[in-house]
Structure formats: structure tokens, C-alpha cells
Image (cartoon, rainbow, N blue to C red):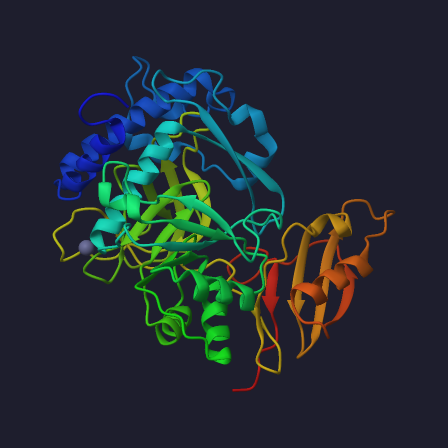
Length: 438
Ligand SMILES: [Zn+2]
């Protein structure tokens, strides 16, 4: 990053201009990025050696009209292919790689590899989102993240340091502090009351649970804004966070696989796709593009992850195209994402727990499970054993649930052959089949 303006700053400056590019300019830029990605993937990633053949003409040119012929990449492909999806060689200048893990609602864990360039792109988009919404990185932010109880533990959490852009001297004054998400909601609120950050960032589900708990305890906590990560905030969470914390929720759509995919327009309304960094398609059940206003599956192709190219990856979310935005930006707009799991569990006495249970799945010797609240204090754990002859440690998990959720939880277990898909076609790990009478 030498010279007057390093790559991160150059990319950010481009984003501040490219948001107003004409649709033709944007398409031409996207095709230039995609052709580099496709040529690289075909040459250096075993999985893609023949998978992209349909778009390559015999002279090596790319026929963009055949784009839809590239098969859609499923999460199960990522699990099954493993190293076959990794590049044997990286293009020059893409920097070192970093590794992350994610375990989604379908159970099996994924290993995701990213590059320094992909990280620069993610940050450029993040800083544009802050600029759009006047998020002040010279103030402090609290992040509820991580599921290692030994890291960022209450009461002190972990100081992550500066969270603004490296070229912004004012951001030297702002600190990001992390508290891990296995911390009780009461202790997270205590941490926030003590540290007084201006911003809160967490999953929307956790934001909702914190807001409801703050209200119940009469905690006096306020934020300039709530910055959700992961899926967009539900109307219910947005209202609760506004009421409890006086904070607006600045929606975004981000995933572990795709980085920051879309951000709320500064004029409000819909989410603008970060179209300089990712191609978003919305398709129907047959894989054909849907017209504006029709809901379909979100398919992404991030441009900058040369280490593990995801070409036409089915993100497992639903959205639809919104009409062209009146704000003047030509970035495509999508409606708010139809959420993945946004479950919280309720106790009849008013306590609320976010459903996440951390890394306890191994206790049952299972890959797939579903934890359901079935009554005021009743829970049922449905799980698919890896080996039917090996008993799961049900007592240990029940104890863990009483520790994490409610001390009087009655937990029953049911071994099943499969977890049935929910109404969105996806098996959910946490479901609430009981809600308190209102
Ligand atoms: Zn707009």
C-alpha cells in the first residue's frame, strides 16, 4: 500500500463515483471483473476446469448471453468439493489468504478462504455505507460477535481498536469493543452501560433480544444507530431497537460467503447492491431470472475472491428486485431480504433468550439438529445421529440449555431421520413453536 493513495483508498474513491455510473458503464465494469474471475477459475481451480465451458466461445471469448448456462453452485457443493474449489495459484497482487468457518442452518460446517483484495473490497463497501448514513467512526462501537467463551468474555470484552478507514485521522479516536455472543443478555447490557458506545453491531436477532431485555430491566442505554450484521433487520426488531435504544437500524445484507452484498439506500427504502464487488441475480425455481417485484432465490458471484471463487452461488436467501431508486444511484435495488432464522425464545416471566447455542452440537454426535421451544418451558431437540449405534449425550445438552436459556427448561429429545424443511425450503436449527400470550 505505497504511494499517495493505497489500494483501499483508491477503491473507496472509485465506489463513491461508481455509485452514479450509468447502467452501461456499470455493466462494462462488471463484465471486466467477471471475465478475469472466470478465466482465473477455469485455469487454476480444479472444480471449474470444465464447469464454465458453456460461456467460453472456441476463440476464448466470453459469450455473456450464455451466462445462465453456468450451473448454480450449492452450499452442498462447497461442503463436498472442499479443496477442489480452492485456487492452486492466485493472480499477482491478491495478497495472502485468511480462513473462516461458518456453520449455517443446514448443519455442515464450511471452510471459507478469503484474500486481502476481497478484504479491501469489503472494507471499501463498508466505509461507503458509513458515509451514506453518517456513521461516525471517531466514536466507539460495541460488537456482539464470536462464539468462543474464552475470547471477548464479560466483564472486559476485547478491544479490537480502530474501526474507521485508515486514511481518516478522526477515526483514530474511535474504538471497537467486542463481547462474545454467548454472554448473557443481562451481562451484555451491563457491559454496554459501562462502556457507553455510540453504536451497537450484532445480528438482528441478538439486537431484538437485547432491546426486549433492556426494556424489561428498565436499562438506560441509547445508541446513535444499530448496525446489524448478517441478515436485514425485521420490522419487529427495528421497532423494538428504536423503542429501547432510540436507535435507527441501518440495514445491510452481508454473508460470510459474499461479504457486504447490499446496503440500505441513504434515502431509506430499499437496499442497493454493491454491484462493483458482487453480481447479484434473483432466480426462480428453474434458475431463470425473475422480473422486478417477483420473489426468487439470491444467487451471488463475488468478484474479488480469487482464492475460492464462488460463481453463481445460491446464497439460500429470498429477495426481489425493487424499482429504480429515486436517489440517483444506479446500483440495482433489492427489497429487504426474507430472513433466515430470526428465532428468539421466551420465558413466561418475560425473560428472552436468543436461540444460538454455540458449539454444542458435538454433544449429540449429530450433524443436523433442530431445537424447538414447544411450550412455556418445554423444549424438544430433534436430531439426526451420525451413527445410530452411538448414543448422544442428551443429559449434557439439556444441562447446557438450562444454562444458556432458562434454568427451568424441560428438555426432551427425539432422534429423527431428517429435519423437515421449513416453509422457505430450508431446515431451521432454531424454531419457536410457542409464544407468550400478549
Ligand atoms: Zn437509493
